[in-house]
Amino acid sequence: MLDAEIEIVPYNSGWTTAFLEERKLLRAVLEPWLIGEIEHVGSTAVAGMSAKPTIDIMAPVESLGRSRAATAVAVEAGYVHYPYKLEQMLWFCKPSPERRTHHLYLVPYNSLLWLERLAFRDILRQDKILSSAYANLKVELASRFRSDREAYSQAKAPFIQAVLASRCSIGPA
Image (cartoon, rainbow, N blue to C red):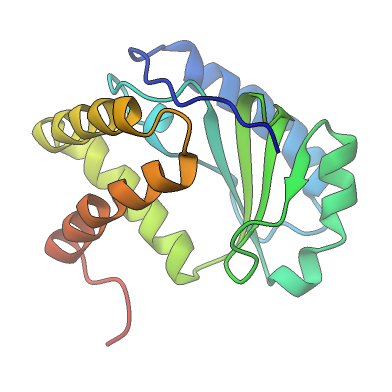
């Protein structure tokens, strides 16, 4: 699969509007599978933060098994499905892997992934020093892993896990 290179750009206030417009579409087409509110996650959901210019959208579903039928509906809505981390989510991008404007994740509601993504977003929204440090890390990693999205994501993981471990009590008891 040909993939878009990683590029970090300055914050764009239009990202919120882009999310709200897409959420409206997704609510309509995914309604039979949704069990909660569709969330704007990732760096584009943090005001003032530099990010890849891709709107990350997390939609809550009861289970991955029960929501597999939503794949065809998401594809009809312009998303491309890719079998990535199948044990955690159903993953989509729009309009194509080469030019991504949106990522869509169908995630079991209140799963560890659901809780961690919301917690990390909320921590970054509240802590400008931490969000600045994370933005700087992403710029550095994007220059190192411009053509390797998986390596980029893996290199960010220790920062994210350290923040979650120090700021909240999500995970196994």
